[in-house]
Length: 180
Image (cartoon, rainbow, N blue to C red; front, side, top):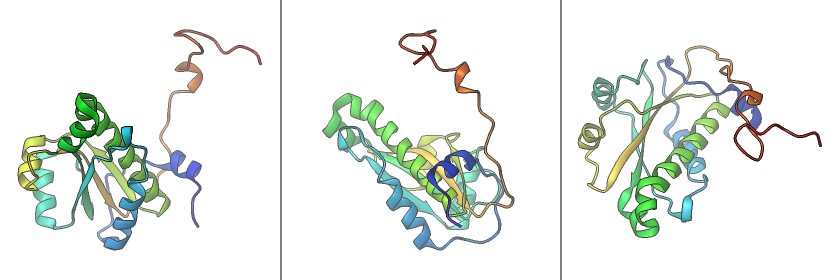
């Protein structure tokens, strides 16, 4: 049964335990096709992806990335092309838009994966320079985020969140919702 977008948003969890089987690479490619449908500031589209499926490379990245837990089938390294971002968006493209765009692409990827019955976890706890070196990234390609991917080892329910009434203001900081 397919999930609605709302169901995916409500049920997506960071998965840290995976079953020992790999989703087909075609499924990963479809997730990447959905990732690039994300918004892009100034339409820069700076995202670049490295799909890591080799167990030895996964172990190498795990050794320097304490946030990678379990044994994911894949690690997707979401990178930004900083040179392209600077050419199209100047300093704002380099500093802000490239990271923002890659983050939105990663969210699309993770929500779509949830809808396909796959589990993901976004990881930022890694030394950029080592990940770039291990993956032989060109100088202007920066690893922004790693997303682990695989079949979840157990069912998850959506995470608890702070009620919006406690974190939302209207018209100014501290502003209350007026009766409409």
